Amino acid sequence: MQNPFRYRVFYTVRQKIVTSAVAFALLVWGTVTVVQRVTTPEDRSCAPGVSRPAGSDECVGVATAGNGYAFGREQLRQVADAIGRENATLEDGRYATVALLLPLTSTSPGLREKVLNELQGAFAQQYRANRQNNEAPKIRLLLANTGKDNVHWKTAVDQLKTMTGAPHRLRAVSGIATSSGPVSRAVGELTRAGIAVVGTTITADDIANGPGALRFPGLARVSPTNGDEARALAHFGRVDAAKALLVHDTRTGDHYTDTLKNAFSRLLARSPHESQLFTSDADPNAEGTTANTFRRITHLVCDADARTVFFAGRHTQLRQFINALGARGCQDLRITVLTGDEASYLGGDPQLDRSVLDTGLTVRYAALAHPDAWRARPGYRPPETGGSTAAYEEFVRTLGEVTKAPAGPIGRTALADGQTIIAYDAMATAVRAVREATPPGDHVPPLADVARQWPQVKGSLKVSGASGWICLDNHGNPHNKAVPVVQLTRGAPRFVAMAWPEGGPPAADCLPPRRP
Image (cartoon, rainbow, N blue to C red; front, side):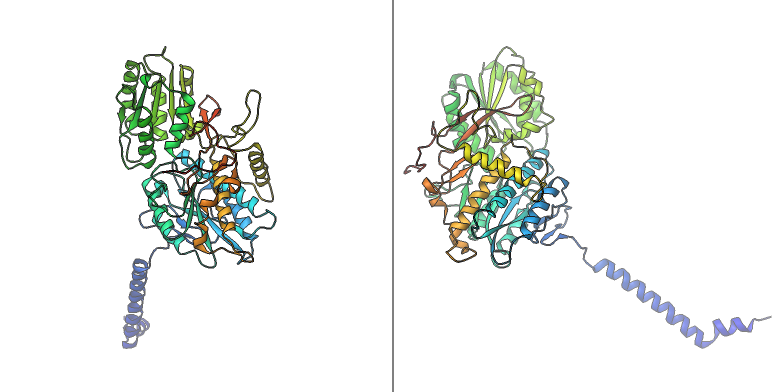
């Protein structure tokens, strides 16, 4: 028997129309939902001004809000928060911005430590500058991330070039910490845009200006060049070239390694020994296979009866070389390794076999700064010129203030690698230029005038830095800057002596001589 109710519900013309309409609506809704999911772009933003580029999980760019964004790095959170708190105290329209351009998301343990220390030093100077007798303008600090190996430098630089107007009023960029191709290109673009740049730990001779070579108009540096470091080491060590040889990387395009190799080659022009070569990986932080090469090179070092080995390479390969020398066959031969400031990374490197430092092997390097360089102690008095104990103690007092509330905390501080000290001085140099360029009664200087200040940073107008006097020549390079010679030990790196590119400290007037 047929069910009349079923017939009425499912088989009437009206119900067929209703059922079809519902089915069609569901089909259209599902199709639209799928299309929306496919065509709606993925949200790759991380924070104001910061996003993840296509194909990357790194958050790169400029944290334009200035509110303490740490780019997803927990070790930077406390100092980033402190910067955010300081920025929040500033009155709109009465500050100038200085950006720190750094590889904030680097995966290298050494670079992560370096970045943290540089942020701490820059913040300490920002905090101090904003409390200096109501001097204007106040300083706002922003963080700009170029990503691992500075791969995304252009993303950050393109943003910075748009920030010279309100509300940011960007007037200088500091950080600029690695002597590499991407950093050189970043400095070139910034300076061509009229933005003043202050390098912290760039030491490559070819990321600099000189007579007849104004490649980076508006660039100043607070660290000596590799050439100056090499000359300072030569004056300090009085090396016998007949018993010295050079070990260097053949990978080209690395500004630090290339210019350090050239500087050491000039020093060893009279050495009878052929240079010993290795080739690092395209990523200089990678272990690669160079450890095998160094085991073989140690045999040749012993064959040459070398007492001094100059090393031109990055810190990963330096650590491998030191470890290999610890197992050398000529244990009775005392060897001194001399190298550049990249060795500062090794102070906290857990892969360095510190026991090899007890095998007659001494490792010394030209540091950019050291906490003992300007402190008197039994048997050591700091030089009377070229720097001062008072300037260093002012840095220590300021760092003490910002490590605790309300300014801090800023995370664990460590001074032995010199990075905090040199970043503090670079920020002081940027602040000097910004304020000297500000007309009386104005709150912000004209952009172009900031980069024009460097030729006057000398003599009585020098920056009395915690790392030593910063007396710039007409090209923005530090004149006869103090170079602490530091030795690796089983514990913290130990200050040995002060060395100078010119063989002795600068005169009291700190005026660079006329160059041809």
